[in-house]
Length: 187
Image (tube, rainbow, N blue to C red; front, side, top):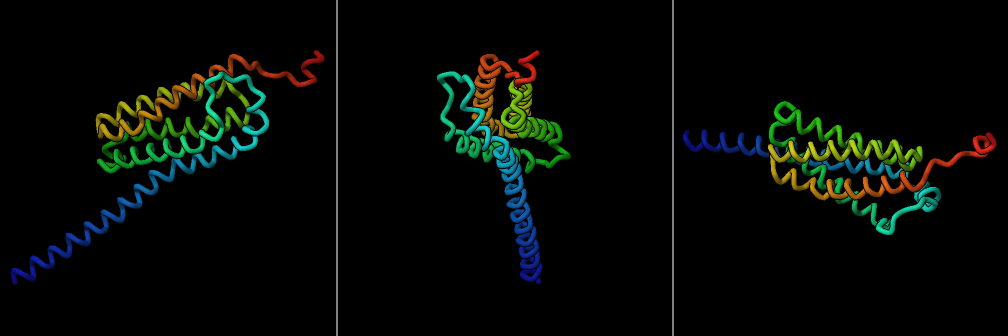
């Protein structure tokens, strides 16, 4: 009877462990897919403008080559997703509402930047957006640190890149005043 009771208990624990692993795997996949999907959606706004409008802008000598953006953002979005998974895994939204809400805010600001900069060609609005994104991402990294220092450290390259991109956006905004169309030039 003892063996039967122990065997049944072991099977129950194995089943629970299997469900947690499958659920954890799904949560990790969703956590990592969300920022990557947003990045892919942002590339829709970027693709045409990178070939037509972006080359016409005055840019600093320290502008990275266009081919670098895709691989960098893929790595950053993957790290961000994994970081959010780690925090979510330590209590879900119930226990981690503040860090995960800040994460969602900075992600929404991130997703808005490409449509503003490349889609609408509003470099000033994009600069406001990326500045707010930097603050929100910094607050996210700070809050992640209180939950899981590794999750916070996974955001540090993203914070560096946002700082770099903000400097680049600032330079472009300052050195490329809005163009007037022919109708405005006649007035």
